Length: 482
Image (cartoon, rainbow, N blue to C red):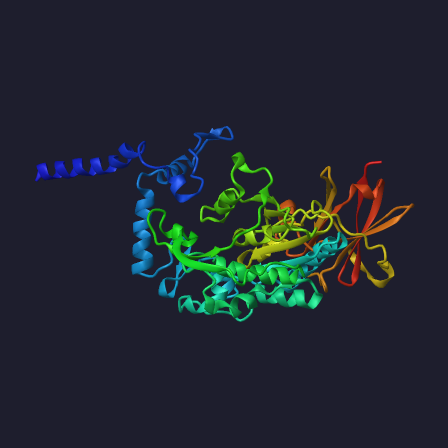
């Protein structure tokens, strides 16, 4: 018996040491899982012994455990394919369909924005559109529906779909206030029988992207190639993002529409290593998702002088070649907080963001100088009993002014005006109805934020009044350099 126990102990110790033996020789988990691994913890933090060292070390070690990716793949296969249970932030739907777990919140409408926040989205986008139009460009907003919003029939039975959510309410609000946008939910649902989303990826495939591209160009009122006659083949060559989450090693390939299109000659600004532009585009369009954060292209074959600026997320990658082929110059910035000031004259703007991230439109104010509204009459607003406080900072390129409102305040149409006055002048700006929660370190829903253009030439100290809803509030003063 003692001999068996001794052998058992030896076998146990050997098994425990196998990962350590193989650690220097196996492929880096960061390379396999496409993420940053936990850093090695410090023994001392802020001059004191790190009491969380053991937990942090465990995370560091687990991230570097040899064959970790293989073990994850095996475990996820058993959970997802056999038990049909959610795994690695992936919902396993019907007939092999996969969905992001975060989509479920929109699906059941568990993350509903308040009415004032919905209106704030409309005001924010209207201010962006006003600026783009003033510079001779056209603007359109594109809220890309989650896959579950288009193919709800493949979601598990336990998820009860709500007929109303942030996406449908924002589309209705943009219709109400007249902001140009593409109702991509309707476009995708009208074409869903064509199979326009990947089964094992969270995004549309290239056929869905082509349909979406034409809807966007129609919205921009831009003459464009439709590629209606382009031929294609369906090839099972796509390494899908949700499948990668389930199976860091191995996994299943997804179908992709491969179009036979002869795009006109173009160039990328700052091409990496002098790579051929079409080869570079193929890399951007691949399932590698690498190096596509900021892309600029030029196409001398396009005689129309209108340019394009696209604020986009991962959905925007699939439509890159179509836009590049139809604009003389195009900039694609992967961001949900666009720099509007940098957009030049005669430039169309596409602001694309996926449904599950719509709240980010009003998380922080886009970089855009606040428009003047000097026709606002203070006498049209009742004087509020209470006063408001705000903060401001000199950012060098602009003065940022921001603050929060009590959540009980009646925002009405969510318009916010900031009135600055002294003995010499009175200047009124319209601010974004956005609460800078990170800057203010608060949880308030309502607020305001704006950038004052240094070229406005404001000097010295100004008294401040804030108009919101049907009231005018006294506030603290603001000082500019003389």
